[in-house]
Image (cartoon, helix red, strand yellow):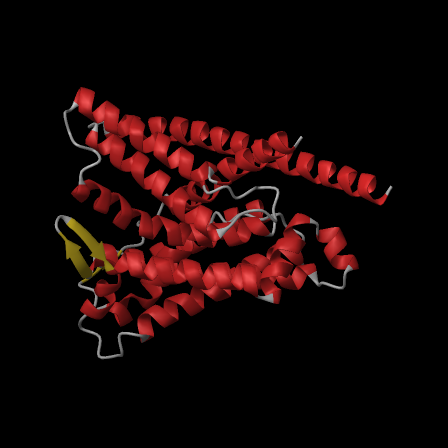
Length: 349
């Protein structure tokens, strides 16, 4: 019996790292495929650095989506809000602006947080499903971005802002660490603290996993959902700052596929669409998976018209595999709990 219990515990430990296994499978697949087809060293130090740096942007946008999904929502307006806030605050971000470099990014974060409030109110007070509410605001704010832009594209972002995305912190041989990685790590740590160490974080998980029980416990689920949408909106605005700094421009047509990237990262990171389940570190690894897939398709020289198709198939397979491993972990956890209760009953008898 002890041997079986140890085996279950070991298997559960393995399944706990299911997202990492998916990442390893993706990396090995593209390493072998590149070696056979193109001869390119996919696992070279410089390419690994490229994957990690690219993943830092995806991780932040994925974590913004993760927060919404935790309370059984989804946000389709991410890219449109980024474009709207960037165009509205664009003049403040430019080198020609005489204002503080902090003003533009703070304004983008504040505007996006207000839009998060709007999405949260539409979802909770007007009882509009978040999919529909954010689908509507996606078109509204993309249209407003185009109206504000006209024929204008803002170029030459302040160097202090560009440093957030492009600044090089350290180079070890051919491995370069950009500031975007440091920013991503800071966001991961702050969100982990919020969700794991604060009362608000515990309420977010509880409200998402069982809203009826949360209401009976005295928690105002509507307030928690709105607060979560606001935090996600603020993080969405910060994503806009990072992306704008990365491309050194503000354009109303940018960020069009951001909500798809965000959903992909969250799902690959083990976040459940049922709500109340998921963690920040898994989301960060999900970003690495998406970045590794995108990079692998590019190094294999897959034509752009086929990349979206291949990416969709690989994401479905990766999510299926990750869900399978997660379900196995839950089965083992339930079985261990049942065995523990039986052992307690026997000991009491």
